[in-house]
Structure formats: structure tokens, C-alpha cells
Amino acid sequence: MSDRNSAPAAGSRPSRDRRGGNPPPLFLQTTPLDAVEDRLVYALGYPLIDNSGDTPEEVIHTIFRDALGIKRFQPGKLLGFDTDPRRVLHDCSTLGGSSGSCIVDYVSGVVVA
Image 1 (cartoon, rainbow, N blue to C red):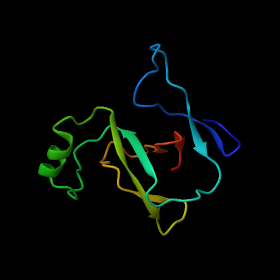
Image 2: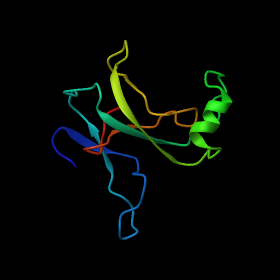
Image 3: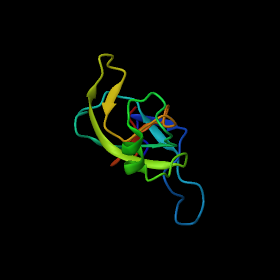
């Protein structure tokens, strides 16, 4: 996973390795992404009820089935860059509690955002 275009990052994969030990570390993307749109990614976080009111509670309960506040694998795709090119847009199902979660490339395992 590590090469000259990535650097070690703190984080964890959704599960432990086959021997029951800790998973290997994630690595940071250190060069510009070649292609951003439609790249398969995931976030790991602890989604909670959205107190901002932006997402109706019935939608949250439909998606998360009342399993909030536990670690969740939240897959999605990168959609492009925000107006600030240091931020990317994605469609992973994140809510409050997922704030600060890294966005990981699903294929390479490298943190892209």
C-alpha cells in the first residue's frame, strides 16, 4: 500500500486481520488525484442523529436502522472538488459523528481526503 505517493496515516480498517491482530495502517495520498469523479471511496465514522435538521429523522432511521453511534462503513463515490480544491465532495452517507472521518480510496486503501 505504501509508495512514494503516499505516507502513513492514523486510522483503521473496518475489521481486524485474519489472525485477530490490528489491521495495517492507512496511508495518505500525497500527490494530486488523477481522477476524482466516480472514484469508489468509503468513510468510517460513528453517525448520530443530524441535529441541524437538514436530514429528516425518518430518512436517518431508514438508512441506519436505529444503529447510530457505532462504527459504520459508509461507502460512496467522490463527486469532484469543492470551491476550495483542498476539499472533495462525496456521497458517502455521513452524519454528525462522522465529522473528521477520513475518505479512503476503496481500491488502494489510501486516504484521499
